[in-house]
Image (tube, rainbow, N blue to C red):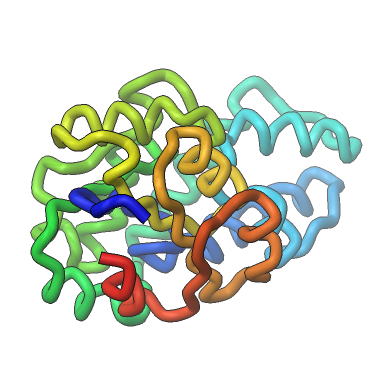
Length: 211
């Protein structure tokens, strides 16, 4: 493994425990519109995915998606998150002990990233080092978000470690030429391995093992 000079963290499901919240909102919306898909199934299928992709899946399952589908889902998730977000276990310990530069690169809009980090008491760790797919106009598994983050932070892709918990995030990190650590805290590790993760952890503190 190349010498690591930068760590890029995904936000949802890696730093902030928000994936289950978003999946619950999506599952409830689906049910209200005649499509039955449990929160667990929604999390497995849509974690890390662009909401437009979720809309297309909803239509494929027989749902009729209005034009405001994405806006409605996004607003509902933000509203539920406003009631409280827990950090992923071990994240505070990890961020307090690492000395390398690190940042966040997430598919969420900037306001959602900031809200999630703030409510999980993590925002002070990152400051302005937060990057959104909406900054580059491309969502994971496209690698351009990670490449943009690394370039802005002044580090070459081979010297960058990505921490991801979703299929699309792992694919984006691999495509960017970075070392990818898959966090399998609540998701099958094999899925992350199948999509190219170089290492698997189930405790965020173990990210330090690869530095």
